[in-house]
Image (cartoon, rainbow, N blue to C red; front, side):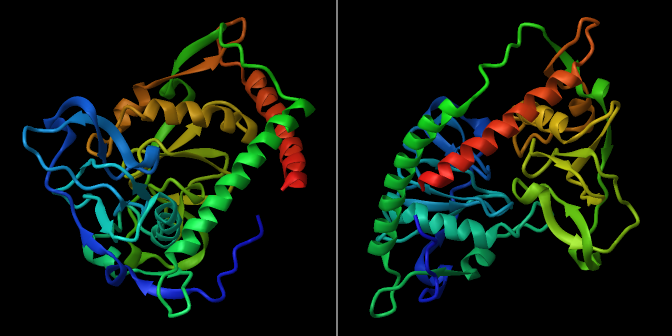
Length: 345
């Protein structure tokens, strides 16, 4: 699809466009497993942390709304009724407008997510700050949000994506590797592979504008939440940042020097690392972190003892050459596939 033209879009204050609410005070720890989604301040799986059984006569939060995380601005459209996490600073924000439907809801949620991704665990939003944010939307002939246009755009995008996926399947014939063989893999403690060092707190008020990356507990933009010139507590390149708070388990390879916030641990490799090896290990670190929720944290000592599976050589040590080779091949395949896909779009 062609790039969307935003020149004629208009700015709207969220609280003028939506009824802004917070869920009732509730925590997943007080519920049994069930089949009703529990929506919290997560940045994946549509914000659904798990599925729970509501209390007797408990009123659910109504669907057909947009949920926003005050931690990092993650925004999702919720079609069905759900249990929303409330009662604390990280309580999700609920946005209601009778004109919403799944299509324009996804459209607007994407716009809100783009505007609100500036928030981080150390500088969280709340009901009032989210309500006061301004978003730009397409408008109709009298200047109101054009919900029909947004719906139509998303339907067309859905068709385009479906077509592109078909083309992607065709492009696979240009070469893909088979499923990776894990029969010789072993479990390794993170502390066997890395020295884990906690980041250092730096408030927004103390930040000095510059070009040094500030890595926060964010799930996007390689964890970068600001650029600073403060240089008292910098970490070297060729390390991995791993959030233990906020967006728990989000990991990124850092190829430049940086300052890590106190919500982030820095993994110093006890081996010679490069981009390819880091890209292999990072998804496994993320998987290890999925057992920890925002309310649990991923304490340094627990992180060090956490284990991840890795390919092993004949001596039982991590086979870094195998990891590097695998990712190098996958990167070439991905580049080739994207070139074929771009030609189809």
